[in-house]
Image (cartoon, rainbow, N blue to C red; front, side, top):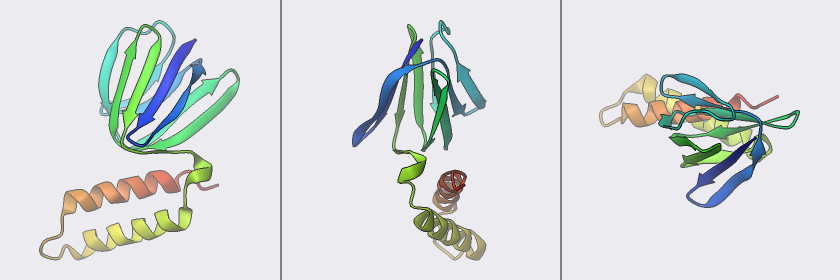
Length: 129
């Protein structure tokens, strides 16, 4: 088993024993199993999935870091949300605002910031059933 801790600036989002963790690294998805070699890597906006016994859980993450050492996985991220915490109307509005900013490309538009906002909104919306 692995010990998984997911931490944000304002709360300890999750702590528990899991069989496997899957997260989006900068070079693609990472599947972490027991006895994995140590690693520390940046993570991208995406889902984290993990398995408590036979139960799969998932959450939306923003960027951050994932570290594995001695069967302990630590994810430090600026924000994490369970699917039932996501305000889908707010996420849809954020997606539309970001798309409009990117479409208009008015002087002073921070394109990188708008692209990140769009990616975060799309990630959150991917949990909508």
